[in-house]
Amino acid sequence: MKVFTTGQVAKICKVAPRTVSKWFDSGRLKGYRIPGSQDRRIPREYLIRFLKEHGMPLGDLEDEAMAKVLIVAQDQVLIENLKRELPAEKAFRTSTAASGFEAGIQAESFHPDCIIVDFSIGQVEALQICQNLRRSSDFAETILIALLPDDGTTASFDRSSINETFKKPFDAALLAERLRTLIGAKKELV
Image (cartoon, rainbow, N blue to C red):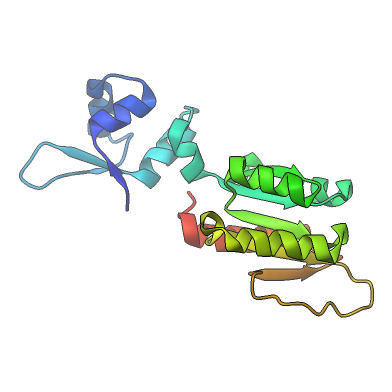
């Protein structure tokens, strides 16, 4: 569990340390005192909650507080449905890519917690995206979800690089809930 000193919180909030101490002493900012000392410690989740409640920017904590999802698809209706179910108000940030090349560039710059790959872009390209990501140690912990087309054929391929599969058509709300569970277990989303 990550904790911050009042000085660290002051830097994040761009206020004086004394202001943070007042927030803490008044009970508005939750935390604890170190036994036998006047030093205060604020756990990360309480700080993020405080910043959100008061409409303050999360700054460097944003990456920790948001679940970042990269959607690799060409189907605009699918993309819009997923974006609607993964709104910023529910601590999601989404980005999209239409090809394997774009997915690689986006993955490097966006650092997603989860990548959703729509196999409708082509099974060979989709599998290559998944396998390339798994080969990189940077993406070893990234959750990979495959969206498989319901075209009557059984897709036979090595699923070892994929965490979950959803067969289309699927309930976008159900996928969003599954993402909250998977990413939440990893990041302790607030």
